[in-house]
Image (cartoon, rainbow, N blue to C red; front, top):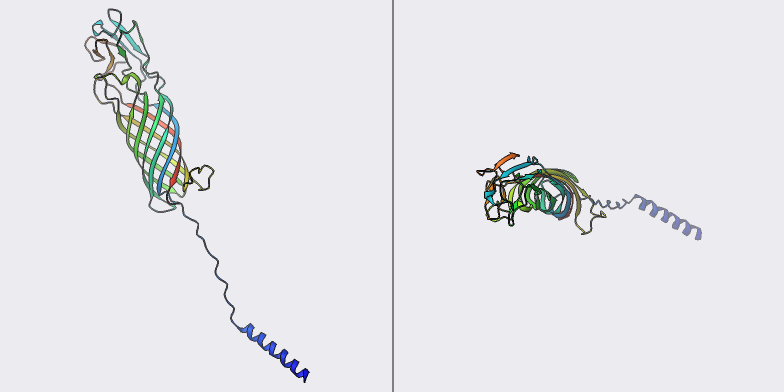
Length: 291
């Protein structure tokens, strides 16, 4: 009897095991897929830049003019000569900051449009007003280079940007409004020089690359850090007021190269050239917005 009971138990266990083997197995859950974010240039950004600027105008020639005594420019009586050596030190450091916004039509690779404004400190053209006179100038008289203005204290731009992004690399062209001020004795002579504040235009282009979000340069926890190299040509219009003016006598009489009685020995010009210069700079931007 015991043997029969044992045999029945074994047979039942085998039957249950066989039945369990025939049951459908529960499918394993599919793996969780986390898509890699596609980079986009869309968003606001702000940053800093530094570079080198140099004059591109045609005002490098020396200017020498003989001025009659009637203008009261010189301390000694009689006509004298003022000579400028031409444009000097029209190059140097440029640095400042920028802020802007980009919009990319298709994330990844695609067209990018944007707008950017920047303000720059300029340190070139400091020696352009050095001159040599055969007699000391009279008290209150002033002389300055007549061939354009390449000395500036600052300039800035407001520009549009149009480019194409190859994922994290952006190639772009840029252009728009420019302004500037400064430049020594070409400015600051009431009623005898053009406005100190100048306006004009600028055009250029550059390449920008976005680093990973966890870059060691990401001090501000931005969505991306971008590095750029950019070149700009800037032209600030001088207008036509008092063209050729290069000195003011002690009595306040302006002396222009086109004045009757002024003999231009060399470097003749009756036109004040625009302020023209080029800038090559590198910059860093911190992008805030979409990844």
